[in-house]
Image 1: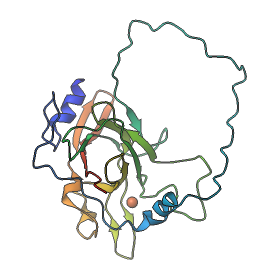
Image 2: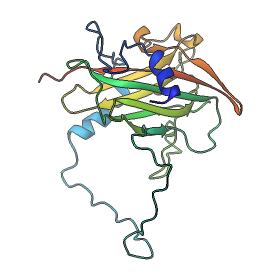
Image 3: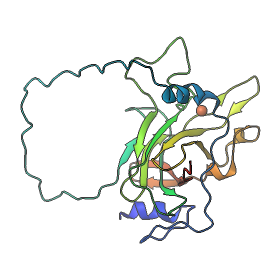
Image 4: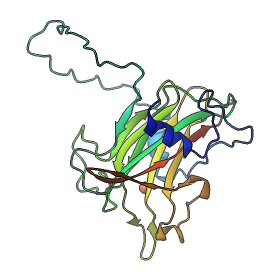
Length: 240
Ligand SMILES: [Fe+2]
């Protein structure tokens, strides 16, 4: 386990030992972010897929159609590397942010391996890539959103930029937040949001929840500074 990863663990709100990573008996499932509202159409579409699915477009074949040649492994290979993800496209402007955490099952109190999570957010100006109906993103273009997966120890980490707050009414703002949609077999689907402590727009927000609000720590490097935070997730078992 790397030093930086141990530091992330030490900052974790979930009390876990380095060896077993077992949740406290008092752990509660991570809270959802409230009214599904904007997700309802997407979830309904997933529940009722079109009767005739469109065939997938065939990607172009490589020019030389032959098995890729092998090469030496070299002396520097290391197994067990975490899955590092990046939410933002290259050169996205904003203040660099690294979020990491673990995903646990409330029933086993242990980390869940290979959990996939949709993560999406506004840019530094509070804009989503699909918030302008007159300027929809081109097919296959996804900005400030990615799927993130946990590794064999339930650990995930992604690099992004601090999302901007955005106005939703004459005097109403949504504080900075990052959206999560977490799905894993045997567990209840979790739609939630991550918030940052100290955001002035949280005072009048209808959806803010203290359990979803994290602290950020300044990390200094020779090439510049960034902020990092830990957001652990506990999935409720699906008892249907
Ligand atoms: Fe949002």
